[in-house]
Length: 350
Image (tube, rainbow, N blue to C red; front, top):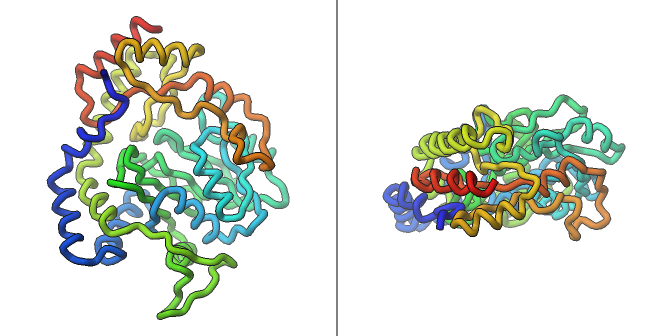
């Protein structure tokens, strides 16, 4: 069987430095905050082209904190694309705001600027483009705040820096994944950074002094030191990971031609996708030949029952993408013979 992703192979690449870094934290007795978290925040912010990093326990938690730190209030609207993981909308809802779902471009599953323009109302406070599969969703100036969901864009070159702030995710399967969960807000806005940090620590503004921040109650929402250490220990390996993913993607591109989803030259290839009119049949045929694949995502965001009552605009491009998209194995450490096996299987299944 050719796996979609091999987490054990990833860990083997970095086991030595990760175990040393984590052991150092465990011996220190400093498990919450401390210098390792500050160093990780600074390193990820720099990687994402931003001045400030504020750690979070997950990408979803980072979305909720960012929405609140940006001054968005209950009932305010945030426009999101119809192709994304549910947490983009879920994080907005947990902040008390309202996600407004609009269509993506016809050629790529990235937010359509025209669809955004058509969805702006007097209640709109921000748009949250999702930089999907490592590709950057560029938007023109639409006169509203841009808060980026860059959960899948760590390692993109150049990184998405057009918005006021961005969130990233360190879910273990990401190009840069934690050994558990984690996330971060990155921004050049010093005040937003301070507000986001306060919101992650019960609104603390001084010794035993807690205030509401941007009208919101703070909570406990931090990146712990063990995860920060594990992330830092992998940063030296990140460029090689991205090169390996790009090399595999290039081999796929050469054979798959028009089936391959268009991709930015600087994409870290967080996920490699093709489109096929009989996606489900192709997925089944590949599995019969020992190739695991994945579907990102089987239905448009607006079709999620949890979003009943939220404004949803027509999204035919998203619906077509969700019917046709199939992700192929593409990860650092993937053996060359497995790449050959995927291509051979595709040759017999297409």
